[in-house]
Length: 429
Image (tube, rainbow, N blue to C red):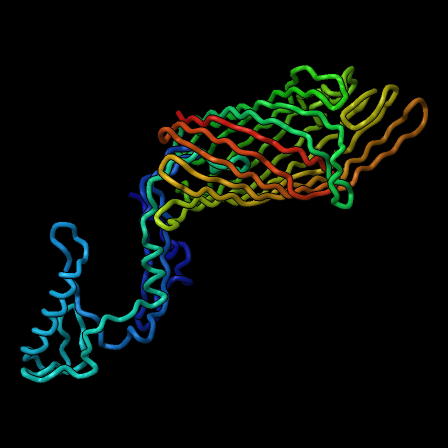
C-alpha cells in the first residue's frame, strides 16, 4: 500500500502548531490502479493540521464507549454499559486530584468516594465539532472503482512499462446549425452529417512515459453536397510524462505533433477535405484527483491544451479554406485549443456517470493568393464554443469497459453547433 502525504510535500504549510493541539487527517492510497482509466480503491492522500476547537481543549470528554464483540459496532446496550462503567469508576475513585481517568478524561481533581459528580464531570457526550466531522469525511475510504474515463478529457500517462491501452471510438456529427459572430444560432446551416472512427493507442515506454497516437478515418454526406469518400485525416502523436509517482492524484505533461496526412487542397470533391495542410505542435497539462463522495468514488479531471501551427498550407484550386478553381496561394492557420474539467461519479463499482465541461477556441486564419490574376485576401474571425458532454460508463472488469454519450455545444460564435453522439470500448493489456 502506497501513502502520499501532502504534509511531506508542503511541510511548512501543514506542520502542527507549536502547542501540539491539532487534528491530523491522513489517508492511505491503495495499490496503483490498472493503467488507462481504471481506479481500484484509490483515495486522495492528505495530511491537514487544524486547530482543535476550544471546547475540546477542556479536560472534560465523553467516556469511552465499548462496541459489540461480534460486529465491532456501537450498540445502544454498549452505550448504556459504557455510561454505567463510567459512573461506577467515578463513585469509587480514590486517586489523587489532578489524575485523569483513563481514556475518558474528567475535570481536574478526582471525585472522592460517595461524592456526587459536579457539573464539570458531566457524562453527556460532546457534540462533534466541524473539524471532527471533516476528519471523519476525509478519512472515509474510497471504494474500489472501475472506469473508462470521460468522453473528452485527457488522461494521465500509464503507470507500468509495457502496458497498452486500445480504445476504438466512433463519433457522429448531427448538424443543427451554427453560431454566428454575435453568438446567435442559425438553424439553417447546410453542413454535412459525418461519422468518424478514432483508434486510440497508448503504450507505456516506462513507468512515467507514454507514447500515444490515434489514427482517424471519416465519411460525410448530406447538406446538398456530394458525399465524401472514406478519408484518412491528420495524424496526431503525443508523448505523455507523468510528473507524480501515483496515478491519482497525478499531473501529466503532454508534448507532441500533428502530421498533415489528410487531403486539404486541389480537391475534386470539397467533401473530401479533412486535413489542415500544416504541421502543428501540441502541448498540454492534465491533472487527476480522486475523492470519496458519500461512500462513492468521485474522479476529477482538469486540463488545458493547444495546437500551434509551425508551417503554412500551400493552396491550389479548391481547398478546405474556401478557395475555388484557379486559386494559388497560402493559408496561415491560427492556433486552437481547449480547457476544462470533467467529473466521474461512481454509482456502483461497474457503473458511472461522467460529464465534461470545456471551452474550445480557435484563432484567426489568413488566406492570401491570386484567383485568375486577381489578388485575394481573407481573414476569419476568432471562434469559441462552450460544450457539455454527459455520458454513461459500464465496466465488465478493471480492464474492459464501454462509454456512451454526446457532446453538446451550448453557446459560441463563428463555429458549428452540431451534436456529436459517440461511443467507445476501452481495453487495457
